[in-house]
Image 1: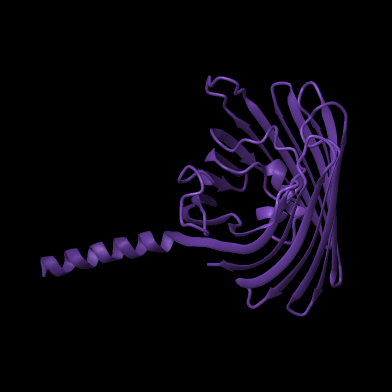
Image 2: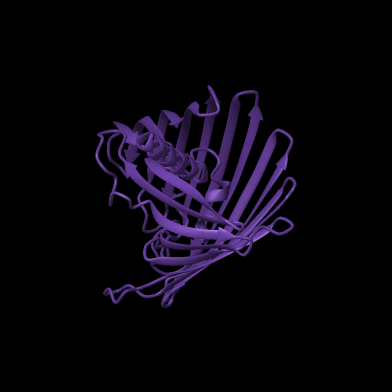
Amino acid sequence: MKKIALVAALAAVSASAFAQSSVTLYGRINTTVESQKVGTGDRKVVVANNSSRFGFRGTEDLGGGLKASFNLESGLNSDDGRAASTFWGREAWVQVAGSFGAVRLGNFTSEAYFATADYISMHNHDTGSSSDALYSFATYRSSNKIGYFTPSYNGFSGSASVSAGEGQAGQKKLYDLAANYVGGPLHLGAGYSKEGNRSQFAVRGLYELGAFTLGAYFQRADDGAQNRNVYRLAGMYTLGQSEFHANFGGTQGKGDFAGNKTTQFTLGYNYNLSKRTKVYAYYTDINGKINSTDFSSLAAGIRHNF
């Protein structure tokens, strides 16, 4: 009887623990076949990875409105099976959240980027050869961060984070700020980041009008000696399971800041076989007028989320 009572007690404790916490395996495999041309070289056919990844995320209800959570995410190359970078290089953080918002520690993506350029990249999630080649990542860093995320209030939310330099050569403390607003069909955002004498500021708007979605962002980037402006316009039309995409971006600047006076346009088509799986095709072209190599790609791909 004592053994039966002990087993029952352990089962009750285990059931309670599982009821209060959960861990989810998730990921995305996104692969294309492409005909690419770089500069004046010959066209070549490649099988390319488009930011495939897998990860674990979990939450625990601590009671009193508090929750603890974590996220571990690793990139992989779906074209050859290799790890894309540091194993948990995409996300590796822990946080505590409540009515006050959330405090997060670890390695996580820039919220300034999420609030602006990523938000309007509707076609292929800003991945692969059709990704935004013009947005300045001069102040982008995801490691060694502490961040605060506000609760949402009447559609408004924000975040602020600091990435420690940790005394590494050429690496200084980095600040990242973001703000978002969602009001019905209108979505607005802004992001600012700064490391030493380098900085960037961007604003974004997106509007949903029936089957049409229209978005744009504008970024001002400064590397301390030179600066440039970056802009992008994007549109999507949905018809049943089909999506038709178009976007165009350009840069304006002086001096030798990499990527000055470059344009990029992309035309894409998605067919959603389900909520998790789609097939798609696109053509993208980068015209590097100064300090940038011309590039074009005609691609077809499959994306599956799990």
